[in-house]
Image (cartoon, rainbow over all chains, first blue to last red; front, side, top):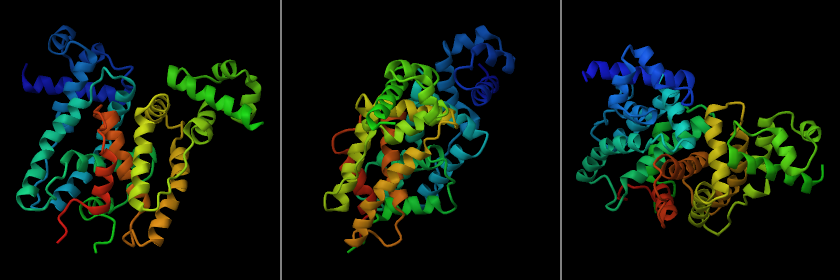
Length: 183
Length: 183
């Protein structure tokens, strides 16, 4: 399938998800909005969860390039700002919150692929940091990413609290420098 | 209302939530399961979200006593283990994941009260740590809690990955000690 046509299908999928929610999302609706024949869509993605899982990883709307600022601190701050934007700026926040919320109740909607894909790209941040001597040797990069992304999720979605300016700097400083006095 | 009767209502509310999900939860169903008259329940809690919000904070099944181990490290490790149990051990995990997942799509189900109530209890951990000189002076306790709880949520719910033994120790060490080499 031509990449442009594929992006139209993904765009329609995410727009309908954000607007109507996962339960009301249908491949028929995606066909109608994208102008692509239903059977063509089914040939490529055999089910609604398969289509949505592909859209979450491949849609231009959720494209993710890992930052490369020259320092681990700068990269992680940019990463946290990226997660804040993803979870609080429409339209990406409508898409991301609808998809992640749906995944809690619908195990067939596999968002592991979305997280695995992002983590595969985030890895290079930690490889560069390791080469620069910025990381304690046995640090688990996935733990660092989950601490930071998780804090944004809890603050913005569960507490429904504003993510204040400076949140990224403070969160990254806690994880890089620690919150106990250095003796 | 007698505390015991109240707990029966809360218990029925959370059992039905875990079993059927938020959409299918009804006050009629709670009345039937708890054996308490529907109009009595409505007199105390005027709506389904109000009843569930109260149950999340007050039900014995979700009771939370902040740990007091003598060190900040010990307290936070116990706190993370508590969150791991909440999100991965049935029946509490069925309740917590159903409630938190529903809150994403149903803003009328206010889980802020649940987080605010827990944080009010967690505060004492940080007050004791501050008195013992274990915290950098301008540390934001809510940030520390959100980093740790968020990491468990991302790992267990979004990644659907096992939370390995030692996760609490490693997560707490990252936040207390930092992941950059101490010079």
